[in-house]
Image (cartoon, rainbow, N blue to C red; front, side, top):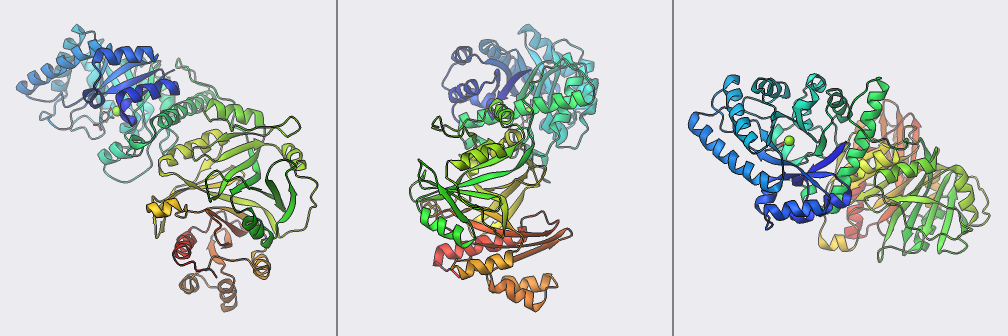
Length: 612
Ligand SMILES: O=C(O)c1ccc(O)c(O)c1
Ligand SMILES: [Mg+2]
């Protein structure tokens, strides 16, 4: 399958966009008219640059508001079209996208649409141009692909066909199944976009919130299945109007886009195979997704290793050993391993910089991640050290993929620590701060390259702004990662790295005893305001004794139909802190109602240095 991307998806100049698409590995691009108009390059120079970059120019778009108009407007529209056909000849582009009329159509009559599009097709044929007619979801009279197909059928010209855009079809809740009945050769172009499920007017949704496949809520594998069943064997392109992508690093966005198409092909191909269906469209096969078993370790990289070690000790972790060559310590409790690395990446910072997970076949998982364009962690490794391979996530977190056997081996590099009894069971989840530009990219990265599944996204109010939050979990629930967009913050907050601390959450079966022990060991808790406990008393039938104990220990509480959740937070160290959680019954959440309380309390702490 040939891959393409519309220049409108990307930031920068047309020249930068072409370079980025080529570097990412796209086969071609759609030239968005606005990008050409504002470019200092001549059409001939654009054509030559694309050739040099080994990119085909697949589509010129959009041509708007053509059909359903009176005769005078038709003459003007044909004149406008002819100048674009000449331009396309200079660019060497053979297909133009014609959107269904949204603004100037006054005649609601299929016969008129057919007659006028036939005139356009006849004119285009003189320039060897093909017309790809696209029903926009908000088209005045033509707004479904079934309707645009009826019209194209009646136009009955070899150079007039359809452009199908998943957004226009799925945003309306239309069933893509009828695509399978359209002859593939009459589909001239295919644009894919995903989008978060929002309830808002479709035009605004389309122009600002589209995302790459796998980053939203549309069933695009199913869309691809029906497309493949039509016999379509052409280009599949990305057309994403997204406010963030248009101001993000162009090269990263291009890679993110191609990753989405690689991932989608593999999923759609599998879907066809499961249903015993065959198709002409060749779709990529990825190394299989590997079952995720659980956390291996989490690594804190810090300029304050003593402070991190002190907190871990207060929580009941045991010092296991010092790495035989590196300024790195291993701390353990139950199955939880935490590495303290005293080589901060940023000055004066303490952050969750890496984590490891156990997967079924690490080498296959790595090969899959690499096929999905994930960069490998660059590591210096001596011959007598365990070979641990990792990939770099969009937020620069390093994610290592190993097995339980790997862990036994790398642990030995830290000596022979003893196994002590602990109230702690394991790492429960990680909460990682994401740069605002990388959020959608991260969601796709973690789902596609790491085989985690996204839960519905949420927003958490905080004094710094709304924090967008997305939890990703392994199918056995052992690995849970919450991604949160860091609020932009003031320059001062950004400089002090305090606007959104990350955390490692540890699971225990007895949070009350653990909290008491930590308190006795002198640990600083995040202080929870009294108002919170009054509200708890109103929401749940908790006894006075239980409420008093929760308040005394700064414990937070939540309950749902499946069980209960009790947790507390430590003071922040640099840009991170620890959380300790106890899950009772089948509670599978994260205490979402308590997250705003935590963020506000941390904000107070930053402002007033107010610790319990
Ligand atoms: O929003 C638009 O105008 C627009 C233009 C061209 C497209 O291909 C499209 O899907 C939408
Ligand atoms: Mg489109």
